[in-house]
Amino acid sequence: MSRAETAGPVEKAGTAESPATATPPPTPRPFGSPGLFRLAGLFRSELTLTFRRWRSLALLVVLAAVPVLIGVAVRIETSDGGGVGGGGAPDGGAGVAFVSQITSNGLFLVFAALAATLPFFLPMAVAVVAGDSVAGEASAGTLRYLLVAPAGRARLLLVKFAAVMAFCLVATLTVALSALAVGALLFPVGDVTTISGVPVPFAEGLWRAALIAAVVAGSLMGLAAIGLFVSTLTSSGIAAMATTVGLLITVQILQSVPQLDAVHPYLFTHHWMSFADLMREPLLWDGVLRNLGRQAAYAAVFGSAAWARFTTRDITS
Amino acid sequence: MTAVIETSGLTKRYRGGRPAVDRLDLSVPAGSVFGFLGPNGSGKTTTIRMLMGLIGPTAGTATVLGRPMPRSASSVLPHVGALIEGPALYGFLSGRDNLLRYDSADPAADPRTREARVASALDRVGLSQAAGKKAKAYSLGMKQRLGLAAALLRPRKLLVLDEPTNGLDPQGMREIRTLVRELAADGTTVFLSSHLLDEIEQVCTHAAVMAQGRLITQGPVAELAAGARGRLAVLTPDPAKAVRILTEHGLTGVDREGERVTAEPPEDEAELAGLNAALVHGGVRVRGFGVERASLEDAFVALTGEGFDVAG
Ligand SMILES: Nc1ncnc2c1ncn2[C@@H]1O[C@H](COP(=O)(O)OP(=O)(O)OP(=O)(O)O)[C@@H](O)[C@H]1O
Ligand SMILES: [Mg+2]
Image (tube, rainbow over all chains, first blue to last red; front, side, top):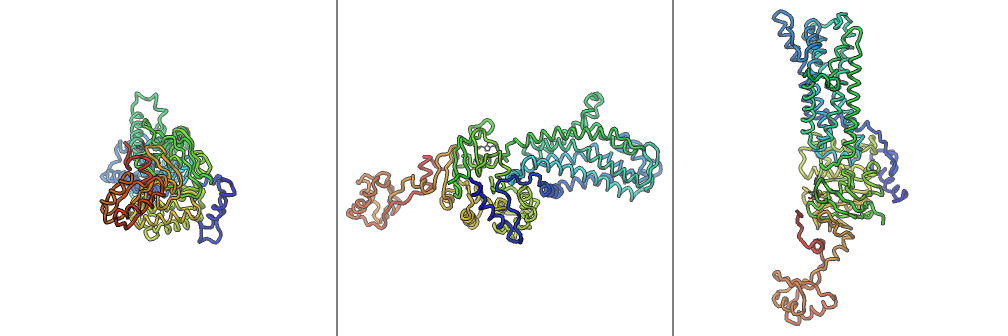
């Protein structure tokens, strides 16, 4: 087919496409590569889709409830005299340290809630959303229509990953903001005593809380990439979600078996709790940076695997 | 005439089975309404998936709009609208939001005119009233229409419709046929798969017939139908006499249904006049006499030598 022939219908198309607008949009070249990186529209669409799913909203509600539970429990326990006994948070160490400080400063509920949700609730929500991202569209059949639109396989995968990361951030912020609200409501707030024992002003504490929330969201990147990869392997959204959650549980079990400490440094959960170092004065970045590096490595490996799989896969659903 | 779709030796073998599509050489001329016929499981959808770059061929090549697929998917597909194996929708989104989603997936679609495009596509398939309703509350036919609207979001050079009238009421079927004719009149090539022979016969200019993954024939519909010989039909209140006389004149396949007697027509058309005279002479009161043109169904049966059944 010659250029001259193809130009005709397209020209006509340009005007027929938008009878309402006075100036027709620029005529697309018949076969020019149309802005490969016109990602904004698709990304916005992907975000709307993610957050309009009933499932995502339910997960966010559960996450928002966790700080409420912790806050109320601490409040009840302390109202009949005495401090908080040990073992308040599921994860020892920093978590417990934060919980015991809640009564004197509500801001600590933010740290305690993040420490409580990071081992399981937060990653589980991310595993569900990431696992469903591609496989769910495949099982609904919408994937084939996105691909003939044509969304482009690499482009779609990139947008999906970005949307899952956006969910990580929103999920973390949901926990943090809910905790902040509950903490301010039930407990006094004021200057913050860091783990190092040095007090910092309340504003500085708030800024640390925001920083920690960002780091926690970033900690979920590796898992998001794993979920996305699993999601490209199957055409069943449920199977992909279950597999990703299963992987998460397995890794958390491995992490808790001391005899396996040789493999621990390679697990994506290994440095998760290092975010507590951001509550030291001065800030201790080592663990946090190691964590973020680990997450980036996981994202690179599983992102590439997902790309390799998804760009060559037969879409038969 | 240039070909809009051209395949050569196109083969797809799903894991471990016999080929779902077997050495297919298809040529769809530009501007045609091309009917892709075949019984269930004959490989129509598989072929369409390969043409759209959704699955890779096991062997052979396919070009769409003059470019190799699936390699050129990103430059070819913006010019192609497709409905593949029924519509697929986001049930929790409204009809309009579904189209907005699909439109935003196309990087060649101008975001500034998105709303207008979606509105006109909805209007075109008669869904403007129901556009705000959640897609899961749509009836089968409404879903099918929404799927079509997605295929019609932008002006296309090629429209690939896999059994587009599935689930539509007679009114909807007629609308689709009208739509297909309109699009064809605008110069869009339409590739239409179906197992409804009369549907193909009514709208298509060209057709191809598949069976068990193989292409049996392809060409202009008129030629395909002409390939199968028609039947000589005699309408008469004296069918018994007519049967006797036709048989005496050496006609084969003589068959009687009430007042209608049919037979294989003689090789030489010139003999028809003599036959008619013989019937009248034999005292048969002839009310109607003539050779009925073969339908595509006759052509299909003649080609496959079997009914329109699923091959195991
Ligand atoms: N995902 C798949 N995995 C394995 N085999 C498949 C798959 N999809 C289709 N097949 C097989 O390929 C053959 C052709 O199927 P296809 O869907 O292309 O037929 P079709 O002509 O579209 O049928 P229908 O008229 O029922 O839509 C069938 O034998 C089918 O069993
Ligand atoms: Mg089919």
